[in-house]
Length: 289
Image 1 (cartoon, one colour):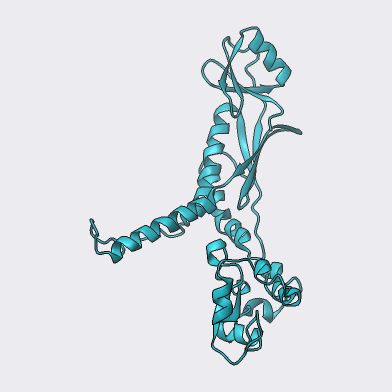
Image 2 (cartoon, rainbow, N blue to C red):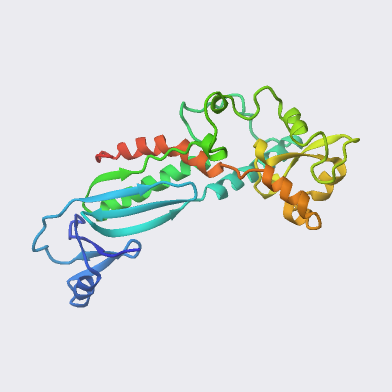
């Protein structure tokens, strides 16, 4: 969304943005040319009459899937954009590469020396799918600074309290102990579902840990996405959604959905990247608030 048109002079120095109507006049009279389509920037062919500029601030609202970026001059919003991140696509690509490499190693057809013993990560490093969010915002910040007289950055340094998101009433010692205090995952799930299959209710058979939302469909290993099921139900469900698998059992579906809680993957991603993004914006040399 662009309420104003960004302007640069002959030496590519950013000038005050102009209204779309004024930009059309400059382009129609041949006094300016289109320099860039997105964001829309025009290049003046003559020296500007008043080269003085008013300060512009970049405002950043970071998110897991989408980050909001805006150019603000006083009370005016000059430019706004929603930056969609590719974190999920990057994760899927890395997982596909992992499968191919594991297959090659299993076939004993390695064509290079193993490197898994000499790889180290720098302190404070992030996973590629998370670091992508930081670098993409940095790229767009540099791009906007080339075409607008940016003098500062404002960032929402948000932090999600995931314990409160799970249980708004939690407090005191329970806040520090967590869900699995005194349990292993399997023991916790057996007690949670009374040593019975969550889908059919059987109790006199071996029980397996089951993902409510299958891993192949983006489900996590968090305990809120796990239940106990017999081998037959586990195999029949496969990759199906729990709603599809339990179509004829509305009471069972309601019980499982009420006990399972939504994953906090997006909140975790924002919490993990917030300080790295703040440090990256500070490294730009502009004042950050």
